[in-house]
Length: 600
Image (cartoon, rainbow, N blue to C red; front, top):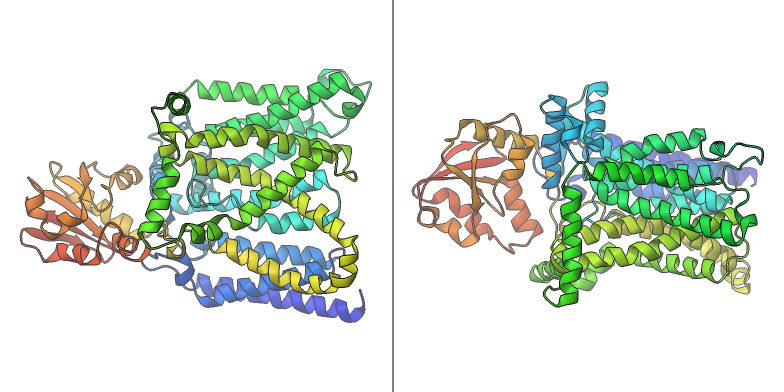
C-alpha cells in the first residue's frame, strides 16, 4: 500500500468513526418519550446517516486492503455501527423492549431479584439470573438489565461466528467475510427468533461459545503418551462443562439442537476411528463432552414437565398428519393470510425477510455437496471435519424443524424459531462457501477482465445487502408489524390501574386481556381477567357486556392496530368511539393509556 493509499484509508476510517459516534450521540440525546410503533422512523435520521457512512467506509477499506493492518479497523467500524443498531432500545433509553413472552420473563426476573422465586422455579433461568447480576453489578433497573443481556449475547454471536470460521479456514479473508456475514443477523426473522429477551434466541446465540469450545477441544492436538483420561479432560473441556449448565438452563429446545450437533460430531469421529484411524489420530475424543452435555440435558429435562408437553405436541402433530386427522402449516397459513389481509404481498414479505437467508441457505447446500463429493480440495482436514459436522447436523435437523409444521404443533411459532437456529449454522457455513466462491472466481479469466469493476462495486452492493437485513432487525410497519417497545408510562398505567381497581370487576382488552402485564407486575394486585373485546363491540360497550368491566386503551393499542396492522381487526373510528359513550367512564389517564369503567 502506497503512502497516499495509506493516508486515504486513515481518512476513511476517521470519517466513519466520527459519523457513527455523532449518530450514537444524537440518538442518545433523543430518548423515547412515548410508544414508538417504528424504531426506525422514530430514531433521528442523523443516526442512520452515521450508520450508512460507517458501514460503507468500512467496506471500502476492507475491500481495498483486506490484508493490511487497516482491515481490522474497518471490521471494528462496521461492528460498532451494527452493534449500535442492535442496541438502539438501550441507546434510546427504552424502558423495556419486548411484548408477550418477554413481559412474562420480566415478571420472573423481578421475582428472582426480590427472592420470591428461585432459579429452580423457572425452566430456563440462565437469562433471568444474568439480568439480575447485571442489575446488581451496574445498579440499573431490571428492565434495562434484561436489554443488556440481549445486547451481550448479540455481541457473543458477532464474535463467535468469525471465530468458528477461523477454525475451518485460517485465511484472513475468510474471517473478514464471516464478520460481515454475522453483521447481517440472518437468524432474526421476527416470527420465532427475535432480538429481544426471548430465551430461545439468547440460548441459540450463547450456544456458539460451546460449539467453539467443542471444536477447540477436538482439534487441540493430543500426545501419544498421555493417559486416556487426559485425552478427554483439558482446560477447554472444563469450560465446556461449565457452559453446558448455562446453555441447558437457557432453553431446552436449543439444547436439543446443540445435542444433535455434538452427537453428529461424536458419531463421525467414531466411524472414522473405526474405518480410517489415521484421519482422527490428531483429534481428541469428543465422546466425553457429548455425554456430559447429554447428561445435563436429561437431568434438566426431567425436572420440569414443559419439555415433555412440547415433545408430546410434536409427536401428536406427526402422528396426526400420518393418520390424516391434522393439517399442516397452520402457522404459515395464518401469517400469510394476515399479510394479504392488510394489503401486503407474500413475495414482498419474503424478499424483505428471507431473500438473503435463502442465498446463504443455497450456499450452505453447495458447501454440503462439496464436502460430500470432495470438491473442496484446498480444505484442511480440520476444516473438512468441522464442515462435515455442521452440514451433516443440518441434514438431521432440517427435517426435524420442518416437522414442526405438522399438526397441532404447527399452531405455535416453533418452526420459525428453528429456522433462526438453522441460519446460525448457515451463516458459518455460508461464509466459508463465499470465501471459496471468491477464491474460485479470482482464478478465472473473468476476474482479469472484470475484477477491478467488481472491487469497485462490491462495497456498495454489500452495503445494500446489510441495509436490507437491518430493516428487518426490529419489527416495524415496513413488514406490517408493530414495535415491541414498552414505555414506562404504559407499564405505570397498568400498575396504577391494578392497584386502584375493584377486584371483582374483570379486565378486558384490545386484542387480548392484560395478562402479560399482570405477569410483568408481580408486586401489584392480581386483577380479575376477562376476554378480548372485539372491534364491533367498541361502539356500544355497555350493551355488549352483561356486567361492569375495565377496558384499557393505550397509545400502543391505537398505533399497533391503525398503523402497523392497517385496521385489520380494529378500526380507528371504533377505537376512538370508546370515550364518547354513555355509561363508559374514563377513570384514569396518564397520557399513554386510558382506563375506562364500563357499566354493563
